[in-house]
Image (cartoon, rainbow, N blue to C red):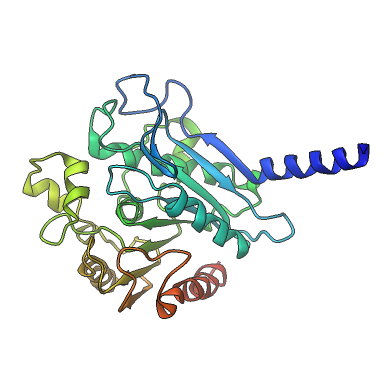
Length: 303
C-alpha cells in the first residue's frame, strides 16, 4: 500500500511540475493599472471575461522529449473574453506532443476597468511574458532564441502586435532591458489584422471603445506595422470564415512579402472561424502537420 501511495504522489508532483500557473507581474510593478482589486470572472467553463491579474500556465513536455523551442499561446475572444481552454490549453497539449514547451497567457482585456489606456494593456502583458520566459529559459530547458507566439483570432492580432511593435512598453528596468520583446517566430490562426474596412468589429470596439479615430485604426491595423524585423510568420485561415474575413491574413502576408519577411500562408476552403486541434474538414486538419513541418524547417534548423 505504501508503494502505491508513493507512486501516486510522484505522479501528482510530476503533473504539477508539468503544468505551472505563474503570475506575470511582480506586485506593484504592473504598468497601466489604476490599482483596482478585480475578481476573475469566468462566464462559462473555459471562457474568462475578466482576470484578477495576468498569468500564464506552463505546459512542459518531459525532459526526455523536450526540444529547445517554446511557444506563448495567446487565446482569442474578440478582446472581450479569453478562450483559454479551447483556444489555449488544447494548442499547448498538441505542441507538447512535438516536444515544444507551451505557455498559455491570460492577458488583461482592454475592457478591464483597471486599465488607464485600454489598448496598451494586452501588448504590455505579451511583451512582459516574452521577456520573462527569455530570462528564465534555462530553468525551462529551452533556448531564449527559439521563443515564438501563437495567436488565434484577436489573439492573432496581439501576436502580430508583439511581432511588429519594437517599442518596449513594459516599463521594466535594470537587466530586464537586455531582453527583447520581439518573438523569434509567429503562428497566426484566423487572425484579426485589419481594424478598418475588413475589421472584426467586436474586436475593434473592445480594443478602442465606440469612437476610435482613423489615425488609431491605421496605427493598430497590423498590415501597416510589418517591418524588415518582423519575425518569420506562418498564417492559417479559412476562406469561409464568417467572423474574421480571410483578407486579414492576405493583407498581412502581402506586407510580409513587401518587407522580405520569411513566412507562409495557407488558406483552406473550409474551417470557418474554428481552425483548431479538431477540425471537421480533413483538408483543414492538415494545418497541424504543415505547421509542425514549418517549425522544424524554418525555426529549428535555422538556429
